[in-house]
Image (cartoon, rainbow, N blue to C red; front, side):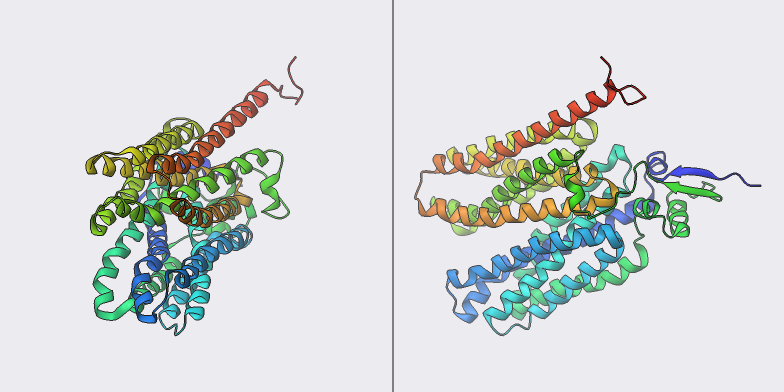
Amino acid sequence: MATIRTVDVQEFINSHKLSPYQLLIVALCFLTVAFDGFDTASAGFIAPAIRKQWALSALQLAPVFGGGLFGLMVGALLFGPLADRFGRKPILCLSVAFFGFMCLWSAYATSLRELILLRFLTGLGLGGAMPTAVTMTSEFGPEKQRSLLVTSMFCGFTLGGSFGGVVASQIIPVHGWQGVLLFGGAMPLVLVPVLVWLLPESVRYLALSGQKHEHVVSTLRRIAPQEVLDHTVFTVSENKVTGSPVRNLFDSGVMVGTVCLWLTFFMSLLVYYLLTSWLPTVISNTGIPLGMAALVAAALPLGSTVGAVLIGRLMDRHSPCLVLASSYVVAAMFILLIGVASSLPMLVFAVFGAGLGTGGSQTGVNAMAAAYYPTSSRVSGVSWALGIGRVGSIVGSLVGGVLLAMHLSLPIMFILVAIPTFVAALSMFGMGRHEAALRSFEVARTPSGSVKP
């Protein structure tokens, strides 16, 4: 009679070298967030053309941006719990198909009200795709490389947004703003059958739910073809948690971490979207030509991309909370430097550093959220943190306008902008201290569960 052996799927992944199959999964998630980033940024690229064609004021056009951001928030809150309940792959494919179709439909909008509604619906799909892609990458990554894989994958978002500017500059003169939306909708729809064909379901999710044993075997054999997986039971090193995935975010073991992550996401995205939305205007107000101001502002996403890879690598080698607390302090220092930069090279350096510290840290905290929560509520944890962060992004866009209207000096303005990054740093530091205290308490317990005197 054959002996039945038990295999922990995460330990299996940890014990093998990163395979081409895992890199394929990361690449598919990279493409997902790249198209996500393109469609998210497309509103900004097409706004001037829409404003000119429909003779709109800036105030009338603002809800187009707000509708998309609000849809992102609602989509993140809605789709995360669904991915924890019904699986990562179907919700990811559904989200990508939904935002692709809605973006495509947006190209045929004939009124401002219709466009706002369609941008909101596009945002719903965008909000569901991103946290699910982050979670998929995290769950297929070995623990020693997990943060680097997630942050590298998430660079697709900033690169997709940057690529959108290149595409828009070529398409709008020939096909108008509608052409950008047609391109932004068609590409995700082309990706959907590829995801259905090549992307597996998370083996952690399947092992925890006890579903589709043969799919777990097939996926793990593609990671390590030499392994014999007959007569094997697959597990994960955690118990299945029943009840609402969202309610589980406030269980005693993770509640403090949830609050710290939400505060960090809110403050981080507030600052990043404030800088993204208003930095070109602030720079041009100093007398720098608008074209040059746009190039200076482009150093922000470039710094974010470099920072994401650097911070992810550091998080795999050192305490993630300490790395992120430090990187947010670095972000604050560079933001303060923007306000006092006395030359163009110094300004570019300061903006690049601000991007490295804000966007790079935000990507790092995405990876932390994906690693922090148990499998049964992981997508909910990532998506609700991102949803709270989206509230911060909306607030940041509004705050930037208020600060400009107050006619503050640049040093004072950027001191105020830097304050939320210090709050994010303190939140990460506090979370690290709390987690360290919990580990010390567990070590102090005897095997019987009583505390040592």
